[in-house]
Length: 244
Image 1 (cartoon, rainbow, N blue to C red):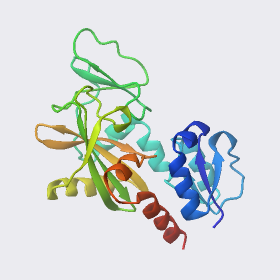
Image 2: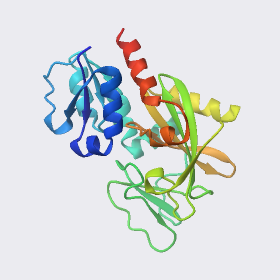
Image 3: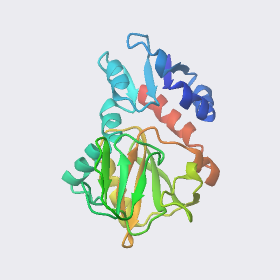
Image 4: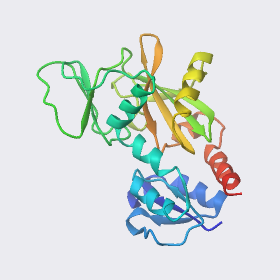
């Protein structure tokens, strides 16, 4: 199918296992983000960068990109994503906050990097950040992986030492069984966006899950560590089916 897989050099090294899985199941060629030529031949593209412009440059040529540019653009701008969800009736923790306690997040951040909890004092509002009311249950959140409209699994992440529960930051994880109401919320959010393979993250507030963010280039470490699901194989099988 002459597909290409795009990662930055740094992320390709950090995600060597995922790169190997994509190559194994799709026979795909790795192209570093820094070396991408939008005119290069490609039957399809698996875009594992956070840059919508890369996806869009191939889409303009009629080439199928996994995930589409529209999803990448939305998921990697927290401000726009929160506003979009709120406008579509999805509950979020209040944003554009100025009085502590609040969480300061880089608009384009990922993996918990640059996120900090401001508990008191005067807040200096900075450009390029989102200021949001924290959920009641700090250090506890939920990730749900989806492929082509279907939830694959859910994992609860917890940290006893950090308000951020990210697995890559040392948090613990365990498989989580979604309730019917939680499944309905996942399906509702998923119905609002065009995507192929994503994670939807939720925080816990007053006994219920509340939308936190969409992970475009969602990682798979927790899935492989906590389940027997070969989620990248499932994603590659989905891509093969989509490409016919």
